[in-house]
Image (tube, rainbow, N blue to C red; front, side, top):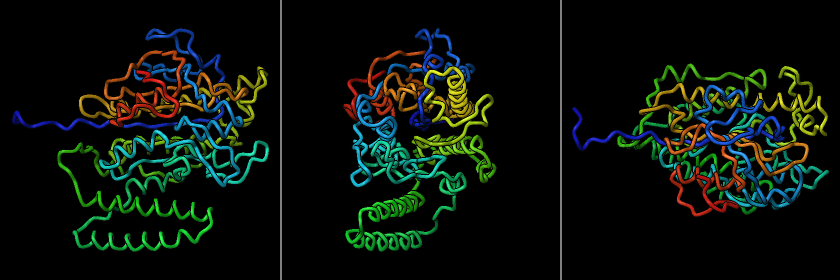
Length: 412
């Protein structure tokens, strides 16, 4: 019998931010009515069986994306909400830290990994001469600071090894020897950094981040607080989930989302981001029935009915992937509910209609119940900044902040 003073650890909240480029065909995305009795639009049909776990939010905007080009000035600030500096690469700025990294600062003490940044395409550098912006902006949504994007991982196997690779454990003497080695590496790198050019300094910073991440894992492996939430996952389950090399894009996306689910289930991290593709990506979507061409090309539909029909099919495919992830989260019991109950999974794009490159009325879905605090199962039409939603999410993740980005209030 449990003593009256005993307490049961409460499952933590998790947050994920999933981005897809090129917007949507709004007439097929936006529900015609609001409230809990709204009718699902054609593009949102894939969430029909889990609609009670999803909040559809329309009318959100990013005022700082009205200037600049059609893509880069909207993608880079998707999670910052601040103005993006027009540059060819020498003075990049996303305007601020991204919401996922702000959450990571709050939750990193509880998990082996502070955050997990994922993608499916490598970072593209160089200049887009058509608009005068560095292509780097189209490859990142996570920013540790305005001038430092967080490197994303696109190889599922490497993500798996990062999550479940052999931990550095053992006696205190061995742990101390690793700390001494890391101190030496960091000191040496800091002395070298001022002698490097800007591009090499950027690469050096990424290297230092990876070393610090190892240091964090070592420290975490040598201490465990029995009063913290401990995930219940057996080793066989983890080994069975080990991914191979994806053969196709659909499989690649599925693996990345499965790894996010597993990362949350094992409490390896409490915040993730995933880019379905870089902005201005030329990926062909002919694997979707009825589609023959690239997503970017078809988003520039010019009101051509044939292109719009294919654009819609791609939108629906994206929602299907989101719905699949939510179903998997919902199938995992946790505490008195499910893993989905204890999550907030934001899914959206940095523009509404891809043909207009419009940063207003953004297509945003929020999956999960946020520990029971979210108004799920309804369509909310809100003519407010996207960052109002971000502040509401930050509240629930324990980040004390008055405002974020261009927020004006809390959405809920």
